[in-house]
Image (cartoon, rainbow, N blue to C red):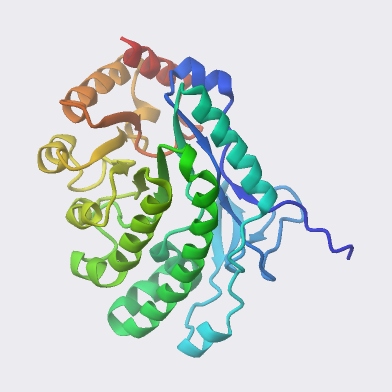
Length: 327
């Protein structure tokens, strides 16, 4: 009623600096994905309540996790794309100024690798979130014109955002992240042929422009089994792969290192689906040593979990992990 909506919603976590120092973390991050100005955005009326982001995607908390419960473009037509209220590609100037100051300070200190969190979602995941996974993945084969029209619109917004974002942060950062899940537990979401046709042109263009603006390394997060796509992911310009989900099909650490280790850095690898929650501290120590010996042979490896560490992981296992890395 008063026309006050508050600061833009940020999508990132804040880790206590004391934890980072204790763990010997060499990286410090700035920036975040921000909800862009949009008439669709709805904040939670109460803690844990449903939200709608700037893309019109509704999320609700189910069993402790936020799940998508409404797909604004499910069953949409090309005409619906033209009518859809797309977000305004404008990053809040106050946020940019704050992030720039943080990045400048970290760069001047010279103690850490300065990481810019990615400012935009990936084109494929946005398609799946806005249309529904079944709807959008079927369209890759049944309605390619719709897919390309959707990606065109999303990429135009992405490009405008990264121009603002990296103009502010680019000179101070060493690497930047991105995220777009291309894999499932048993294989990729789409074939290498479909990836090259639909996703790669936009992904490669985004990476190229990011590197022009920032001159930094490009880190990409994709869950699941992506071995069949990794040649193409590397060709798009990705320098670092995360999270290296070793519990997924074809993601054996030794095979990945032998086939791709001279072309890409691996960041992750410690299984959080089964191993880390259930292993003993001694087993964790042995796994850290094993992965360091395989993925870290000759360099090109950053020890990290194969996704975010959840509440089911015993603290004793985290302590064992850090102690093993120090050794």
